[in-house]
Length: 149
Image (spheres, rainbow, N blue to C red):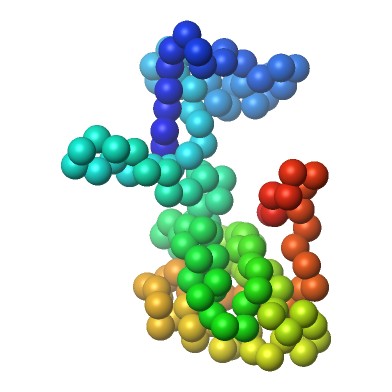
């Protein structure tokens, strides 16, 4: 997780003590937890890979919802997609994809849930396979156009 500290970094969330406590409760005083997961390359460049809250923990394995979404976008029948954690008695959480089909009709998507599971299985490690798929007409978005997960 990316953590930062400095004069230009905020010191709290306005009127949100719970969020402030979560973001600043740290082993080292004054560091802000951004919630972004990143890697650092050999040149010291940082690449943001995912949001911490978008990681699905299934059977102890970390699954990136972004990686699953990027994989599903490669399928010809997928127009839009959002992957979230769904409760699982067996695994704790399991990946669930909400898919807007290219056909525009969730009742006749032109692809099956099993087709998409097979597609992700061919592209990713077995534990990352999307387990549940729901076809929808559109994904809910915020006023700024971000998908509401």
